[in-house]
Image (tube, rainbow, N blue to C red; front, side, top):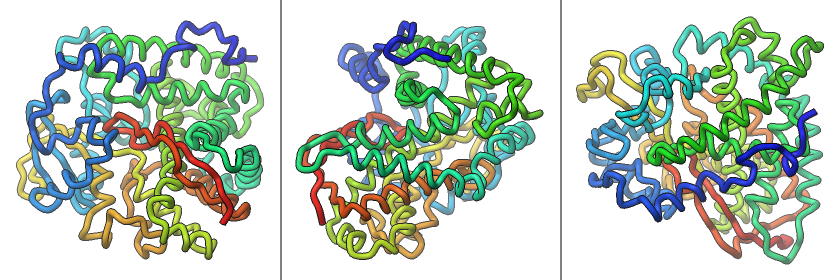
Length: 443
């Protein structure tokens, strides 16, 4: 059995988080980066860490829902910012590709002077970054873990664990909700899904942060560190794969991969890529929404009062909080041919960034979109889970975890008051909170 995190023979087990490492690098080397000179260059991470992105996207939606910015640190790209335009692009997956062969799903690209052999070695293909038909077969392998029947089977365990975490919290003294609740609940869920050693579950958060931080691509040496950390992740999961090869099939995702015709012949890079996808998808997104829920209810006391007086609003409140938080800010597509996109001439090879974080504030779809409204009638129209063939395979599980969290908070008459430090993630891909100082009181 795998060793505990504290005793793990990993060179990087005491490394800083990805965000800490990038912030330290910025202090020393930030002046070397190309400058963000265009007012609509929303790839800049400072607007997210400082929570001032809203008016920039609002201006784009009003003046130019599709627009091109050039000369950014991430190269030239098209901003796609509204529900209509994003859904149109997502509905044409052959024309607007997600494949790693064209650039993948995030805004970053390899350095122009990168060694092709090294790029091939470090490539991590995953089914979200594949086009049909490869995408279809690999998605079908993991999809059975997230059917309504499987989700129902998980509900009792999710509720038991959520209750235990909430019952462990101190009342009347400040603590970090991100660490004590959001990370604890999401890493626990991932450990269950993977059949991952419970005592090592915090490794999943550590790996997720390093895997999902797009900004690291701007710092060559940090990209090297990321690769080394993901190699250690591969060694760990490789042991789990070997342990389960030949064993009777079980419900965990690794066993499903081993026993799937679509995935049991994966290369080590494909195995790693799909692990990264499932870990980032299952960790960062739900974790940041769990933090965003309590922050949003604190920011909008009228909505908190509705939640506290009427628990029947909880299912809709979950959808509204997912819309309001938007835990993944963007997805990228690459044009495989020349195309006309609502009058804009897209060239083959052009990079299109689908800003879900903007579409979820689209005034033509959501009335008063910058306000949290847990009784919003069309909250389910949010694009936080994507749209089309790449819609999040684990959406139902995320919704279940968030619903149970709110139900168990209500059961305990738990009011979460933001009383301390609020630190947001410095990133243009993952959108959420690093720290959230709170104090509990009764309602």
